[in-house]
Length: 452
Image 1 (cartoon, rainbow, N blue to C red):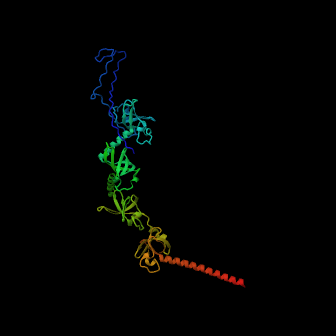
Image 2 (cartoon, rainbow, N blue to C red):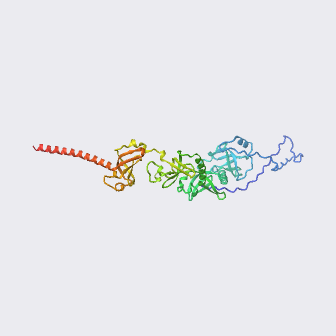
Image 3 (cartoon, one colour):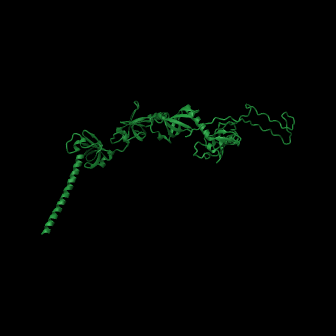
């Protein structure tokens, strides 16, 4: 985004309006200044001193652009806003004509001022003249009060630029929050469009520890002005300060209404080995790894990542110590409620070994539930450790020995599944062998009969 530069105002062109001569009745001879008849017209009197001159009507400020006010337009028609203009002034006028040559604006002078198309907007991709309508109030900057054709030349683009600076300076003085769109990622931070170029250092983006700044391009951010220098065209802003202020307001509101059992919208702010901290409205709560899923997970990062939006249940609060416990699995379907309909004792199913313990191995089945395979059900031979037979990640075939969904327990057996499979293969082999014997016998008998 190119940086606008404001030109130094040129010296104003002095103008002196001479009052019109008083009307003289038809046929009457000219009257001299001393009251004697004269063939020479009287010299017009000097203009009245400024202190004695009739005051001009006070300017009428219209509402927002695009909503013309009848009182304002009537005042303009009466010449209520007539004033001496000089180059560099920012004044308000009314659009009276729009065409390809530009926009004519009544600013209360004897003739309308012209806004050339290239002085309508900084964004040249937009159609300048078509950005306004006849009758619309508009702020303009006086570029030239006497060009070669004797016409007042105005600029909406420059007026917007000057207004932007005024708003930024005011926001800095009053420490108010403003918003701006991120237009680019540069070394050290972000560039934002405030009507002028603004810079947000990387240390003031988000929490100040954001690595991927490119994701903010195109977003509109709340910002605080932390440094402004109009002479050097420098504006430095902070997204971090603005969000902290907003977060503090949210925090007070959240704490006033927080209660156990509530389901809240949250955003993952930080992940640790034992859980994740979730922002539920200006307040961080801990979502422990054991409360993330009905099934066992190795690390919180297997389920969540920073920036994820999710719903969580408030399990416990201790506001005196600043602790809030959250749960995710409580609002997810419980696979154990469907286990009795899905599995029955005697079923042979497939699963994956998820962890090993001294007394056996846990196997996760389809649906997420885990069952235990005791050491004596791992194999028919005697073993001291489960890793003598299986390893984590092994895909195994198991037989459901016992199912107790109300206790969230299931006992499985690799040994019985293997024996049942071997027994099935033996029976199949026996049937095939019998069939082969009969066939051979028949063939021998057929050969003997053939020899006779």
